[in-house]
Image (cartoon, rainbow, N blue to C red; front, side):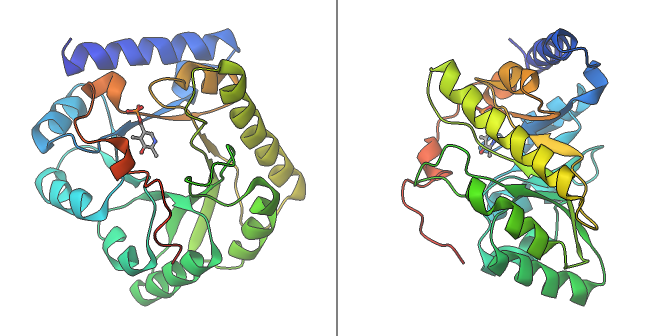
Length: 244
Ligand SMILES: *Cc1c(COP(=O)(O)O)cnc(C)c1O
């Protein structure tokens, strides 16, 4: 299957899942997870209707950004962000999905202040409670959002999570339901400057389920570009090395 056909298929499944809960396809934003995918294949995807490129590693992103910055696409950062990479992420990102601690909020704020601009961010929540996953715990999410909301340079636009890796649909749904509950609770709090516009959840294996549970932003890689050679452990380290 070509990238174009894969994209069509993903968009069809997004539309079907949206329709099943009475939403329109346009209400769901497709983010292409492009880690390990070379610039030419990403370009092909952009030409065929994928308009958000999302990378996990800063160096990889910067290289591809140089080659693709003229393309009609926005750039998201979806990987773990070390504080010493804040300067570099600001060179390409239009949105960061992985803000999960105050140390990072402070560093982003400092740098954004220096540059005199703001950044759209999502708060990453560890809904699976797996040790290996980054993200604020569900219990601490609201207090982190309240604290982070005091920094005007960060525009909090929603929440992100990576669901549990399992074939057990009940367990996956539990993660997504939890993120939706936190999303609703944040809205209830009506925190100044905080918008719950995006619920970023769902990947190739589970994006239709995520949409059923309320996702309006899905991050899809394999279903568009095919299987990756690099093990995902490289992107999701089994041990947390840096909490910055
Ligand atoms: C790789 C990745 C995805 C997409 O994964 P696929 O299973 O290839 O669709 C989504 N979110 C994050 C954070 C990723 O690193």
